[in-house]
Image 1 (cartoon, rainbow, N blue to C red):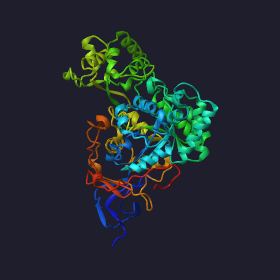
Image 2 (cartoon, rainbow, N blue to C red):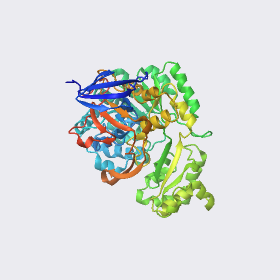
Image 3 (cartoon, helix red, strand yellow):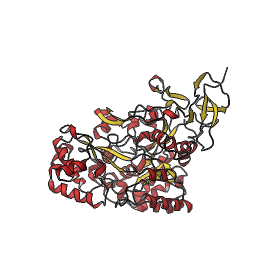
Image 4 (cartoon, rainbow, N blue to C red):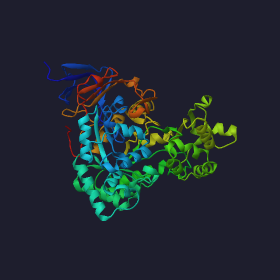
Length: 561
């Protein structure tokens, strides 16, 4: 009798290294790959004839920090072949957090990452304070796929400084204490340190987020803890201020990844051209910097509600809207002076390019006939501005209107250039954040189906490597490759049928929260995590499991528990 628990037979193995694919069978026992040979048998056999067999995908840029506490399945990612996620990006981890700072921390997540406050209050059970305690809380609850995270600057700063984290630079003593907190988090399993230096995010109460109040010296001192303890990497949401990371990384000596390079229309005043950013990036890497710029195949398209239009919060005028309770925001939309000020800021292009020509009406109870119509066309008919159209519909709909806008990354040639760029890593799915506006957790299936297969932007082997082995190498985790002795995280794909499927709006979050999901991908026949099937024959089977197979990805650990 075979000693393998499972044999995946007859498939074309694309092992995640970028090397040639080959027809082979894979044996699995006790959560590990035992052999990859021409013929392998097992007590249970999966027929992969005519299919690809690839490593499970890694998502390096998610915000699942709260959701993992109530949704151990980590949906939608686990539906799309992702077998490992990294949370805590951009400085916004959920720990460390003292009891007196929890409200503020959740308020910042609500503002920056569009996480509904009522959902967070109902879904987050605070049985932890430090970052290692948070990871242990995740482990106790269990996950369908592997989970790891960065310890975030905003959480660390608030933990040490309280509300003053939003107000002033740190003292020498406070900085020393923050460095100790980061070191403890890294030794306790954090995959690295992350911070937001983009400069336009408003946190709790409409205040600038704590990581932006910090000095540059503080940022570098905290990031340098990774080098001092020899654990973890650094993630920085740089915004347009990205050039300094290349010199810093050479001094740091640990891998660094930043977000992000996206394509914008020519002439966008608030963003440097992607070609310039890519040239700077390549120049920095040629100079020896181990820096990875995150890119994505997804257009930056958001479906926003006028009750909480976080898409526009970068504009100073919207601080007035943020400060108003949701049930009083109609008074702001009605204020013609405020509208004029906001319009002037839109027109300046200094903060963002709203691309009015891409904004369409998605939902309007009072004017269902306008659904699908561009606001620019409506404005031309009414002889007014597109922003006035949005405000007027908001008032007519009692703030129930929704609109869809594409801000960036819809230049297919430019996206192709970035995907192919040396040292450009697939990231920025933002899974777990902005769930009422986007569903970019589908990025791996979209990338393989619509870019690698249909547009042929990369050879298949290279495309799989970008979703697996390349990301694992940057993180320093023992994942992303199919090899004897390696972890049995794999996906069996019907490549010709692969598609992310449709997106739909559901109410399945705590406190009746709604989100966009894509729960019907096609072409994903089987998904195994640590040798345990979470999807069989195109159907999720986690409801049949006695125990979820996901583990914690820990910094410095080549294997997880």
